[in-house]
Length: 284
Image (cartoon, rainbow, N blue to C red; front, side, top):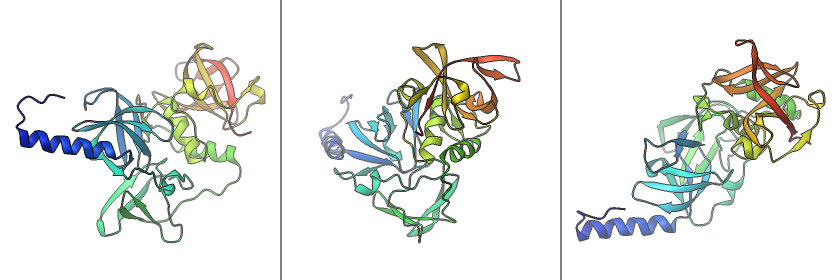
C-alpha cells in the first residue's frame, strides 16, 4: 500500500479502518452476483463469482478490496468491499444452513424499505429463511421474498438434477462464471448440484477427485458427471449426463449434445469435441 501524500489525519483514519476490517473475520455476498478476481483490480481476471447469501472468510484487508476464501468450496480471490457485508467474528449458525437454495430467478426486498428490491439468481442462499413468511436476515438486514417460495420436493435426485440443469440452457459461456448471465463448465455443474443439495468443489480437476468412478457409459445415469480432457491427468471439461445418450454442458453456451463412450459429439460441428476420461456418481 502506498502511503506517500497522506497527511497524519488521513493515515490514522485509514489505519483504523484496516484494523476494524481485520477484526471482522467473515463476510457475505449481499449483491446478486459478486466477481472474485485474481488481483485487487476491477480489470483483473475474474476467477470465480459468489452468489447472493454465500459466505466467505477474510484473509487479507486492503483499502478497497478483501482477499477472501469461500466457505462453500475454499476458492480464494479478491472482492470489492462495497459488494460485501461484514459479519461478526463468529459465523452465525443460520449461515451454515444450506437448507434453502434458490432454484430459479427470485425477487427479494428489504423489509423496512419495500421499494428496495433485487433479483437474485439460481444457486443463491437464503440463510435462516422462514418458510411461512418468506422472511430472513442477512448481515443485520431483514429481507422478505417477494412472491412464492419455490421448493422442489421431488425425491428423485437424478430427475431434479436433470431438470435444474436444463433451466440454464443457452446461458453464455463465461470464464469464472456461475450464473444464468455467464457460466463456465465446472461452475455450471457446481451450481446445479448446490441447488439439489450436493456440495461440490469449484473446478473440474477438483470435482473429479470426488464421487465414485463408473467403469462404463452403460452403467451411468442422469445426473452423473462426465469428465473430459487430453489425458486422465489433465481434466479440462465436465458435463451432466442426461437420458437418451445426451449430455448438458457449458461450451460456448450451455447446450445439449450427443454423448457416448468416446465423448461429446457436437451435432453442429459434426465431430467429437471432447474426449471422455471418466464418469463419476455423486448420488450413491
